[in-house]
Length: 345
Ligand code: SAM
Image 1: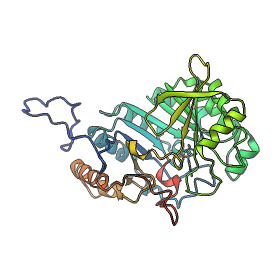
Image 2: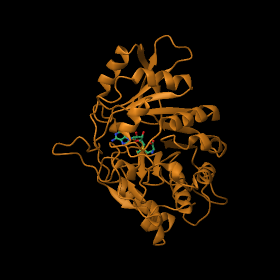
Image 3: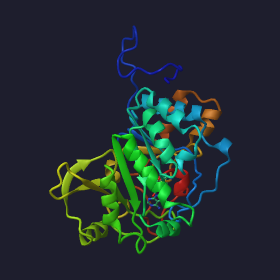
Image 4: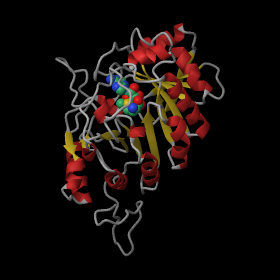
């Protein structure tokens, strides 16, 4: 919505206006354009993975309601945000998820609605989510071994359901389907090539994420992940493919069509220079950076009756304080404001 409550134009002139009415795109203190919003729909999760670290759950009334999410999407869409990724917590625990995706898909300015999930409810939800307009789906699969998944998730997760969810996602025909794996030293680093092949066989693009310091676990640097993939028989060569985010990609040698593996080296390969994103946490906190200290609560603003222009001003103020890089690798301990489950990974 625009500040008077009407739908914004897409960059043209309003009827009779002498000047363009498009607001300036969102930029942060470093001049980076913000076109990508990650929005945590809940801080609850049915899995208990140690590295994600359990959040103090917000009572449901403190989470953003559906109308609030849609209003925020409209405000951000009018300011140049083109892509929204729904995350959490586990976003499929929200009973209004499919309806929300449908509304976000119809929001002016938003060209892509994406979702990150543990896959547990995908067998039933993949088809309805695709039909509602979801374009991009990331499924988290850290292991293909049921016992290891029990170990990683404190016995809360069940592998057959996750894999059935991934199969349903493959059948639903998402334009972008990815498998996200956090590499945990001594836990899953001996099965990385197997995970890659499992993803490729389902038309999904696998990506390996370096462990960030939100909970327990032994990080494996991206350079070592690449070495282990080679030891496990994968021949990967450089490739220029880039996505919306910080992943860089290698390609399987000789593959045609090309099969890629993505790497997100948040700790050893800092990519903050190209940051294009901001986050809204489950409690409505606008967080300029996943590992930074600039935070302001948009839910409270909305509930206090703020206009769209006031929300926009607060977002611009927070982005104006965003640092040049995250502070998760700071000497003396990482700066982490909330568990990953609350901010949304
Ligand atoms: N519940 C959903 C899921 O499992 O995908 C969405 C939320 S989860 C926080 C999003 C992503 O963040 C997952 O791929 C998860 O593996 C990743 N993640 C969580 N904690 C992490 C950490 N400490 N370091 C790196 N990635 C992490």
